[in-house]
Image (cartoon, rainbow, N blue to C red; front, side):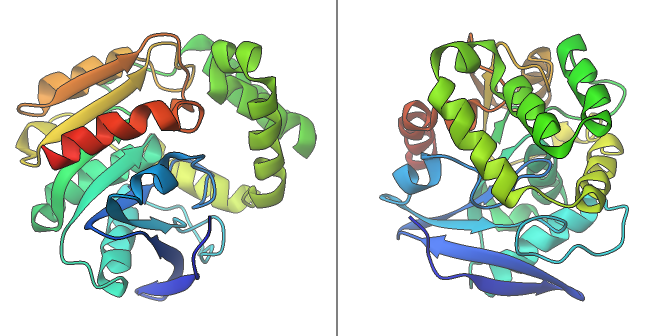
Length: 268
């Protein structure tokens, strides 16, 4: 399901967004190189109970690709600008991967805009976090050396993880087709990657006041799963839910399984 595209302005940067469903507002913030079409079934499942806001971060999709590099602070300000354009004063915030960094930053610098926080497949950033696992490092190292199609397939398989590749070959093809159709420019990808590489909320995360749910796949090749334990320990009162064999893209692979967990947390 897709809704009418609208545009927000964050300074001079135009950001594409859409709104689905009704109820308490819930904004989704995606990770490196993914846009508002890259979520799988989760947003539609939650739009039955929430007013879901989906948007394209700067650098991807139908949003502008301004000169970079970008910072997570800029991207958190972009998120606030989308909330403004959607006429949402405060919202539940769901961030995955780089989007989890952006969600943390928003919760730290604009706590009044964040009702509850869901952090999926992400980390507190900085040198205190566990680095990317070896399989992910190898894939990210090979990606720039490959032809576009081969590189995107490698990244899909690395992000989905062994379980998804083995058990859901049709899902590999679905995400691969999405990446071919909606993949960002190299400049957009690199500018976002810089934002992720320079983010550090390790010492600030204990100041997050929003009730927080941490979701993590136990076989994540992109974000070391031990970072979920770090986050849950740093953020006061945070709750941790782990899906043991799932990879970095468990938000797409397990959307129908995650929806009731997220719904229960946000409505409790």
